[in-house]
Amino acid sequence: MSEIEKEKTPGREPALENFEFSSSFELGSLLIEPVHVRIEELHPVIAAHAHSNTSYEIHYTLKGQGSVTIDGQRYPVKAGTLYITGPSVIHAQTSDPGSPITEYCLYLNCRQTSFHQPGFFALFAETTFWIGQDEGRLFPLLRQLIEENRHPLPGTAEMSETILKQIIIALTRICCQPQQEKTVPASMPAMTYTRLMPIIEDAFFYRYQTLTLEELASILHLSIRQTQRFLRRSFGKTFSQKLNEARIAAAAQLLLNTGLSVTEIGERTGFSSIEHFSSSFKRFTGYSPTQYRKGRSI
Image (cartoon, rainbow, N blue to C red; front, side, top):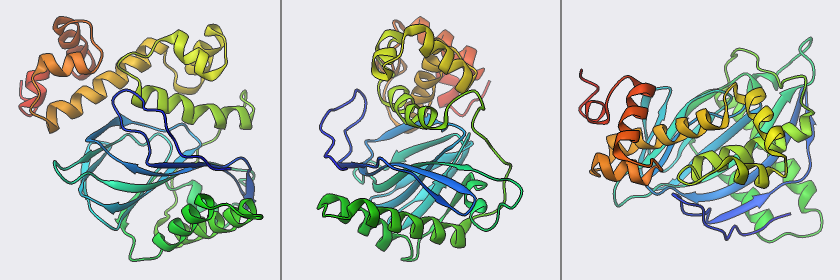
């Protein structure tokens, strides 16, 4: 049920610890499929990205400080900061120099099984973003979840489900407000869809420098054509569009948060030349890299 993540991926240190889950459960009108819980250290930038329309991340900052940018709005992050990022919310994370953020990150998929009598728990699925200080309510539960999977015993799967239910109840009490309903595309089987989405997100977040369509298809155990169709169905974008978006998002964070030159940033984010980087960045954002760094002044 659990494993320590060993393999490094380009542009990011691996999770310090990663524990995966293999079962789902119902809570009120929700079907919850927990994917993994991680202890991560952020070095130094996690580029802007958005989750699929059933995916949620719960972030709890253990130590360090920095910021999270949500749909263009920047929020400070420090020890004890708790925030939820749900479907379609564009967010990026940055650690301050010399004070890398270490966090618990719980990733799960969630969808409503009934919209006629949604009840209390549906508020969680309808909350796409919340940020605040935990005040000691979530930390003990997240720590217990980590410890239970770090040293598994008979009944660990059942205990983990119990803790996860408590986490969702606590989150719903703390921070949830009604938001627009979001559903899984009807043409995708729920289990297949929810299992592939975090793999795809990880590939574009952390392998954008060198990722190819063939490599992504191999990771997903799909054909190239199936992969292309899945990306269009899930994101409304081609592989090239999704890859370019990931590279531009990473470059934008590096322009605003590092002293690297434009040429160095272009190279680090996988562009073949400074000309290709500059033209792609301006076409995507409306600004040259230099203008963007200077505050998007024209």
